[in-house]
Image 1 (tube, one colour):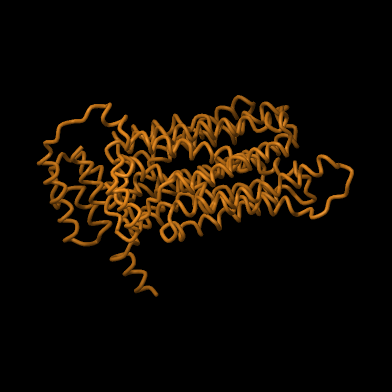
Image 2 (cartoon, helix red, strand yellow):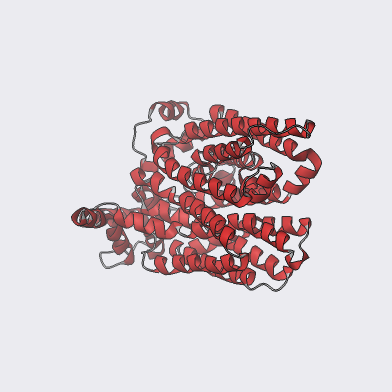
Length: 492
């Protein structure tokens, strides 16, 4: 066993896997930030601390999302100037500051400030996906990128468990440990080879940091030398004229995926995925289940964590489109049953309830199906649908919009319940899930094993490439290979 582990580390993907985990460990802090309000607000209300009101509760929940777009933009700038590794490390700093403000808070202003700062840190997580995308190969990228959702789900589950047994201030202070962990472990990892090639200006050799990074991940001298040679030649032969901003950002291959992703994220948020996450304890309280609300939330968190692992194994086998369609169908069915159940007892409140556990099972299945596709895959698609030359900026814009959608949906939850009733809110989730199912089935393209050139030609409208996109499922995805990305970075 020890020899196998040694071979896996020295000649397999062990180093890639370790670096991917260290980078995505920041998602544990993100998950704790997302799940914190579900245990924090009920404790504040039950203990009557700070005289919390329902309006203040909604702000405490939603402020964790409102500053996410700021963090996304900041992360992109830092990743470009200082490197992906440093950007990930720097994101740990606002996490630590925010959690300390919450844990030591003496009034509501401290809590607001801490929530805003941790929201900025959560938005800065986009650098981890860029880093992992640049150090992995096409065959390992899908699985290793799903470590992000897995770590986030673990953080949410851990927060639910800690919130069940500990005071909210203790949970906040414990959360700082994971931010420190990300900062320290990333220090031991090399910078992204793509970034090192870019800042070297083509002056790279066997003593350069870029070569050392290549060799660290490939563990193959020949492969590292080949990548260095290709990157140097591409940099020295860079003679292509610069395209105008209109050609870059208003071309069909850019605008079409932009519209597609914005629509997909809007349907994702309206389907209630993040609303249920942020208000898990209150959501179960609305169903009047005769079981502990925190135990219900922990159950949902456990299912979410388990299904994020399942998604990691399915994403390269079934494809993005199939998983999103299946996921939307399951979410549609679960919220339809839940909505009908709740609506019936709203109409007939005096009747004794039967199948009292049905709401819990509906929510569990909703979370289960969401984690198979609709929650993690839209974030992954941001790194696949855009042409490489505009991918960082356009992906950042889309992620900013997605995080704005999350904030709005979380913020208006109480207003929706007051205006539409609890059943009406659930039926809103049903409508969005239904639209999402048809959108994924008939509009969303499949990108599994597709090259960047094939995807770009598809959105450009090339009939030949569209045919290839449909018929070429088994071709290795060279467009997202590490050398293809690095060379493209140099030639821009």
